[in-house]
Amino acid sequence: MKSLGVIETRGLVAAIQAVDAACKAAGVTCIGYRKVGSGLVSVCFEGEISAIHTAIERGVAVAATIDKQVHSLVIARPEPSAVVALSNLKGYPPRVPASTRTEMTAVTSAAPTLSPKNSADAEPAAPQATQPAPDQAEDRHAAARRGKKA
Image (cartoon, rainbow, N blue to C red; front, side, top):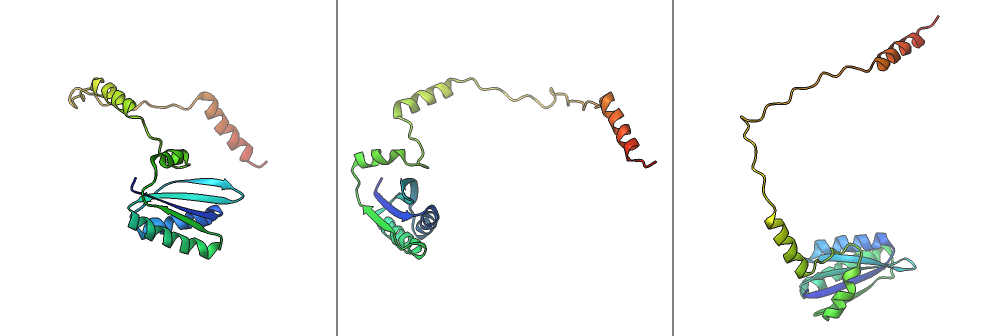
């Protein structure tokens, strides 16, 4: 992670508009959000420092049109412990530890592969003729009888 940017708004709608404007303004990635409480929503971004500055400025400008209570923060080189603290954000993709990744690739590479069947060997499946159940046919006639007026 190069830089970290945070926009805090009052209300989810203002936060969504801020995220949309920020992501369109510069090449940043929204890494997640957190509902702080009392209607406050914090949205976090990652990217290059110049892109984060541009995105945060644009996101704050758009969110300020909805609600005047908008705050922002930009951290150029965040401490790794701060990044770990933000790993429980909603919408943040879970990170798989490196040891699990190597185990998963070893298991999937050891799995046997199935060879495709030749089209000449496979016979097309004949469609089965479906007959209505006897009670369904009776119900159809009963409905027709009930529809007739005497």
